[in-house]
Length: 281
Image 1 (tube, one colour):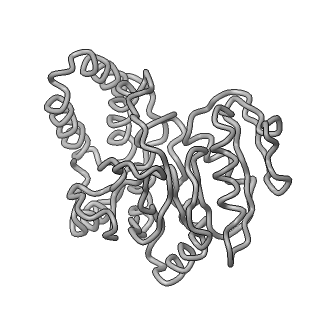
Image 2 (cartoon, one colour; image 1 turned 90 degrees about the horizontal axis):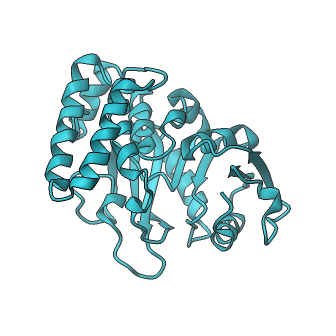
């Protein structure tokens, strides 16, 4: 959105500095024209101006046709890659494990602050350097083969913000691949409270309901929504204002159009269960 010019320049430079890979970069402006950036973006960077802010997932989707290459990498404008070998290491990982369709790196704060547990996409968080299969992803730095992105249908356009990383991971699993957390790869991002957004609680709840409605077999929809409703009530029962906003989003999730429904196969439910997390929580 053009509000972090210094961070944006740092993130783009971290990609241009990658070694042993060819990069093709597009910068998508959500309600902002990156061609007007100050300081100007490097000439190697293609820009795409979206006159209206379509939301984070839709913005990422619009950028994909603008670039070439067999592997896609999505980077938020306030994140960057500390290592110049990140992309080459990630591509080697994908080549050596063809059943992996999405890679999320370990995320660290560049100032040394403790990383939030939410950046580790596992129920049992454990050691942040430990790698393994996951069923959601932190969306700020994601690497995946283009053909898997196409097969999964891309990011959830209607979500605008929040939980699109869960849907993408689920659809990667349903396409026959695995989503993978790579503790040996590292991306940098400052620790920021997601609740700083006034719409955080509402979209958090609405998109939880939409996740279920869009992606789960009908039998599992009430199980997933019910389990997360109980979790949020337990988390926030001492925060009535937050809980009221959350339930307003919960109601909107049932009333509003969730977009395309692509229920995952029962075989996918079974694979996810065997891998450690059935899609009911």
